[in-house]
Length: 253
Ligand code: 9WO
Image 1 (cartoon, rainbow, N blue to C red):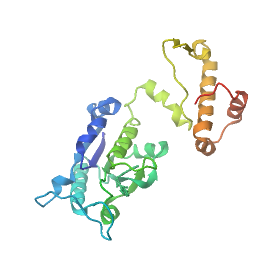
Image 2 (image 1 turned 90 degrees about the vertical axis):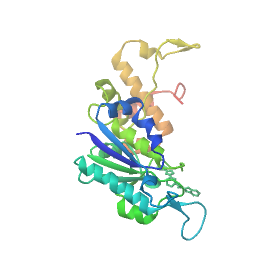
Image 3 (image 1 turned 135 degrees about the vertical axis):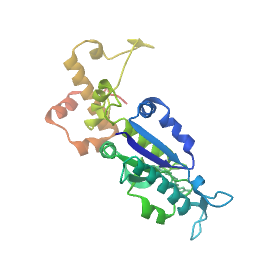
Image 4 (image 1 turned 30 degrees about the vertical axis):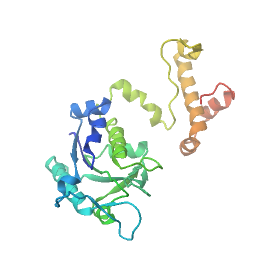
């Protein structure tokens, strides 16, 4: 059964980036997932189609009204139920959420249905969040202009994990992040580009050596840029040896 995704957003046009392009676009076209967008502006009752108001307690900016969001979320939930999803998992995108990582992506990919709420302005009335949201997710420690780009990041990351979306080659290549390390560097033709030659091990044809070099590069890059990942994951004796044997020069950025 196709993964059912609904997103509530003031800017549904933005989601064309994920629904029409690349691997995710193809996955939607082939029916691995279905995306329905809901604009809270279409669920307003007043002539001005108001979706925001000033914050109680004062301060700068505006807060999204609970009522139009509730009506849009109810419509989304109704559609999910028509598609056979009794209890869709409801996610709000916010810097205040739990950080997104590979493990969380894999658990979300097991859900039959997801409803994503993308906020704008300075945020959403807390009572709406308390009533509707199962989980708040952050894609990183920075503020965006709204939750839409974060929602698209979540959608893209999940769709790549659905069975059949990536070919066999793609699935195998993914093992790189599955093993908890950063990816190794990639090279393609020409063998000499502006005087810089591809590392000779990659053109030497010894596949055991190539595998060993790639793991070594992954370990070096992970130690340099993401020591937190190495600490969390630990290293085998063989990996420790691989790291110890390379010299300080000739290392990736
Ligand atoms: C706006 C703002 C303006 C002045 C002072 C403080 C402020 N905070 C915010 C703010 O957090 N706005 C958010 C915009 C409200 C919820 C939706 N928006 C959002 C989501 N921005 N960034 C995200 C987000 C989501 C997931 N992961 C990283 C960032």
